[in-house]
Amino acid sequence: MHAKKSFPYNRLFIFFIVCFLVIGILYVLSSQIIRHMTTMAPALFPVMTIFLMVFHILIASFMVMKYLCDNHRLYLMAIACAFGGSAVLMLGTLSSYSDWLLCTSISRVNYNDALIYYFFRNVLMSVLFITSIVLYHYRHSKIHTLRNHIVILSLIAGFTLFILVLSWLYASHYPGMHMRLIDNMTRKVSDLWQQYLVVGLMLCWCLTLGIMLAITKLRNIFWYSGYFFCAFYIFTLFLLWPDVFIDGFGWYQSRLFETSATLFLIFVLLCDVFTLYRESNTKYQNSYQNSIRDPMTRLFNRSYFYDTLKQQMTKVSPATPVSVVVCDLDHFKRINDSYGHLQGDKVIQFAARVLQDAVRNEDIAARIGGEEFALMLSGTDADTALAIAERIRKTLSSHDEHNSEGQLPERVTISMGVYTACQPELSPELWVQRADEAMYQAKESGRNRVVAWHKPAEAQVSPAIVPGETVAAP
Image (cartoon, rainbow, N blue to C red; front, side, top):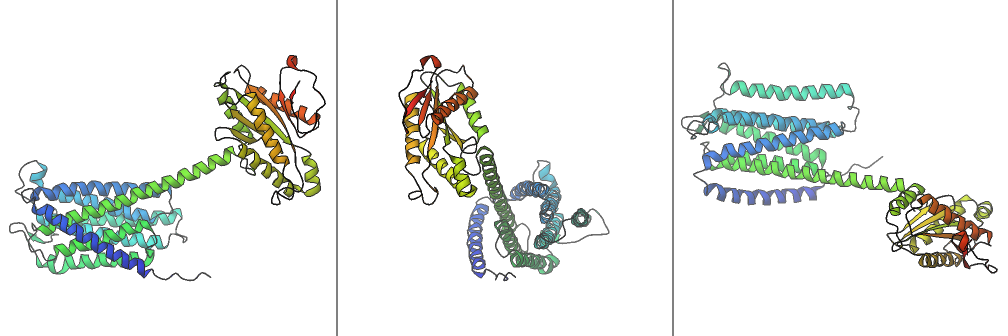
């Protein structure tokens, strides 16, 4: 049974310190900006509202796409409805600036409707944020059935639609339902707003922040944006609380703080996209490497070796030859029979490391059979390829059970055949076949040696071959 994790109070302390610093800096900057833009202040509010509405639409769309990619993230749909509904309510706020929308001077503004939309927008977002947190808490429970998703999504969408309709009815569209929060003539807020509603909204956002902190426990970077979002909204309402008139600096600052909180959330979502892309790219790279490499030795596999040879075929010329080396461990069956297949695998892995260490990055070392390997040496002539093969042979045969760190049960040797292509007429399969013929010539000549393939017409009778000698195959 796992021990229950304690609440990270040190992170909570750091979070509040950072919040205090960021809010303080933004408050000073926003105060300076608004005081230097007093002539543009009336137009500043609807302009920022448009930007904020676009940002909320982007966030809602992003949440829907993430849910469609992983339907176990049902909690994201509550956030999507929160920001989508908020965007619709901000459209209602813009409708209160009818003169501004008609590109005339802002002389008539229905401030009461604007504040009604603002009030219902805060209620909508706060309630749906709490819903999202609750769904996040039960994300690993048995709620992820089609029926449960339909029911939960219907309730979320129904609540969003209910708030939208209710705000529209109260905003001067239905005589039987009216809420007087501001006197449009004097622009003075009512006692209902200043003494009850704004305080209620602050408590609502404080409750949202508290539930979010209690459930997520500051463990997820995604929810950090939610913490800041709640903190910023609490502060904006705190700014609005003492303002008796709606056209005070507090209202413009509140919209700047809302925009800043939304931008921070977008930044976190972009970081999340980058993280997901990086993880996806890493998984793709791992999957691709697994598809082209031998699982036991991590050398390239047979198919990748032949594909690379085909690519090199068009580049072959006397100035840029390509050498193919085919090699096979000597008496490997006896090693398997005497020491077991597990020890045989260690021998193959040891030989693979010797081969890999002997080639350059632009060369290819591959395992093309059980104990059979192949090398592609690009831009390597016959003499150089023979020298490389001989160095590999000597390196492998110099190890035994004493100096191989337990990888070899006894001294192991290898037979190698080399073919160098200087013209692109022949196929890569024929390159490998000729190197393979030279390797079998090395086997027949006594093993533990390197043999180079030449045309039969160039073959000469060779003197007696001793182990370790490099010769040309007739």
